[in-house]
Image (cartoon, rainbow, N blue to C red; front, side):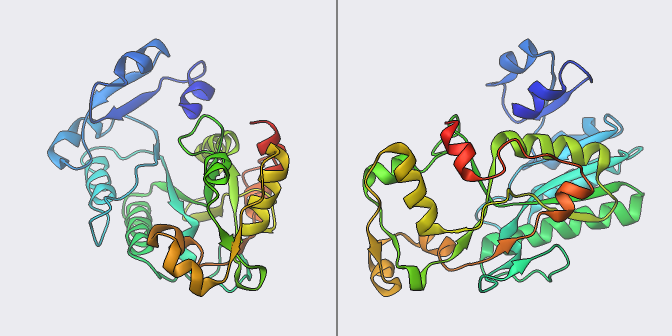
Length: 276
């Protein structure tokens, strides 16, 4: 909805929706809603030739080895005159574990998890569409998104639950982007993104995960989380959380600022969390 609010007064927006649950809200914002389901390719034919600029943020299905949703969308967009621009929201997880290195967009992807493999497959489909059909395709590699109006959009609930974090010697670097800045990055890429270009879409924060939660606890006036060694964390924390604790990287956002000319509204998590 952030992108919708930012664009609704300047352009005619069309949103693909698999259900009518949000249609009323979207119509109230002046948005045209087309019913279609990325999991049912035959329902996507109406998208062909419809839009000049397409923003694709749908995640792959969690039980697949590849991303059939992005494949279905790419096929539908090629049925008639393809769009001039396609921006795809991927994940920084495609880099895998980088041992805390500073990572630019030129670094090779490395799929350590099924989630990353699905996203790499989606990126390939987006690139192929650009090469085969002349679409200006840009890929945003997005880290952890936070905002107070997102479900679990801040560390507050985890801090209240007393969920532990790793000891300093075992800890990993994490990366963040406020949802408002992400929306603005999406819009910037629709107009300024270069063809076949990847953009790390993160703020300027350089914190390890435990330090991030310590900072949030201090800002909220809550107790800091307990610290665990990695071996103890394996026994206590769910696999979904441990997977994020196994990858360490610092994303370089120079290209985001220079080429998309994005001035971050929340340059670090301190500003973003204080605003929440």
